[in-house]
Length: 549
Image 1 (cartoon, one colour):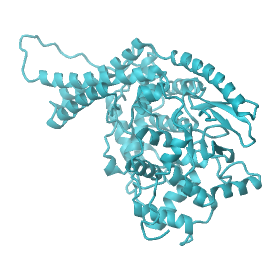
Image 2 (cartoon, helix red, strand yellow; image 1 turned 30 degrees about the horizontal axis):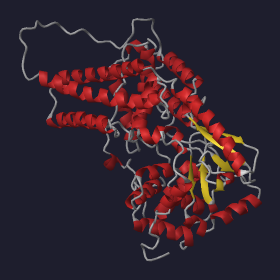
Image 3 (tube, helix red, strand yellow; image 1 turned 180 degrees about the vertical axis):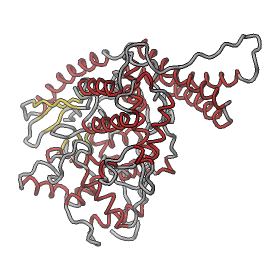
Image 4 (spheres, helix red, strand yellow; image 1 turned 45 degrees about the horizontal axis):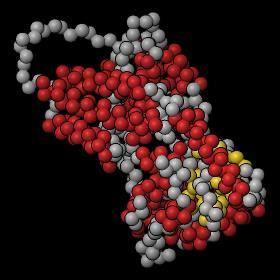
């Protein structure tokens, strides 16, 4: 009997029905699954019951999907966003002058690319920091404007298409405005420009009160995860320190946003962890020399938090303009080292040689060996590896798999696509993974890495990540800003694609959202484990690339 993906067998031989749930129905907007015991060990009976349950689950998902945003609401949000962006471009041209050839070329390319994306259904990249896919773009808009956009819904796909259309017209509008300055229309009478103000016409509101109202609503709505919440609070605390917590928000203007950005450019990294500067004032911090400052990516995260705050303030009538909207630093990913690289065959050969032989004595704990090996042969994210339970390692249809899920205390996944089954590569079985699992079970353990402690900010991955990045790679002599544990994920994707594995197979293995109507709506059960097993076995890390095994 061929079992569907939603039917699984427990280690006790009992069949369970497992169905992924969209983040939209989770109280904290997290991807999750519902798992129900069918209380039978008979395959035919389990199959019949699971088919009935899958039909009911499918109907429920349809009802949930239909509860998204209205079409006119989607267009209203996008129109407002790009109208404001267009006005900023006009203001910049008025202040600094006409577009140069590079800017014109960029906008022309953006318009053309948006047209192609609309025609061919491909992804759209708006050159925003950290945004590498349609899903990430949609998630950014959802957070900034408080939208209900779940990747599993039709609303999400409609939003993506409208976003491409709006971006196309934004590029065209900026170019048209710049073109209109090719000549002078002397028939129109001139009128003095009206002064601009950021404040609303309502009663005064202090910055500390605005922050309190904003954070209370975000927490109550469950829009922030624990790590995200700590980060956002830290960002907003600094904003109050810079501008003054008793500042009337109606008096905060774009000159202030530039001051904030300039301070962030000089702001020390890990200020609260360095006792000598922890209690210094902003003025004192700005006069420090020779201290490591925030990265461009981190600065953009701060500015994104401020954009979310003032975007919320605008939607709720506290201000008439989101003065932080669009305020970011452009970054050259290659120059800043934020673009992670894949390991070369030689580098991965050195890593595997040490992990399997411990020739240099660098492996001192089990988690260092097994955590790294699993990262290599699955391409899973650091925290996905470190939160694995022993029960998540299971045999389904004769294939041993890692069940990547968020069931259990502290377990969490990045998105709905991250909830997946990953066949265990034959090399992991050869080096004794199942024997190691059996030993842990005999010792009464429940987790693959029982020594790891949970951190709300970093999950379970702190110990392995720091050892691998700061010690292991350094001791092997292959450490760089572009090579970290996450590079193992890049390596897996790169090698599978080079081996001719179909792209959607790769996405299913590493937990990326599959794009396209066919993949998202007509292929919900996903690929069979046999298909995924055949795909992952094509990963060959070239262990012999350095002449060693």
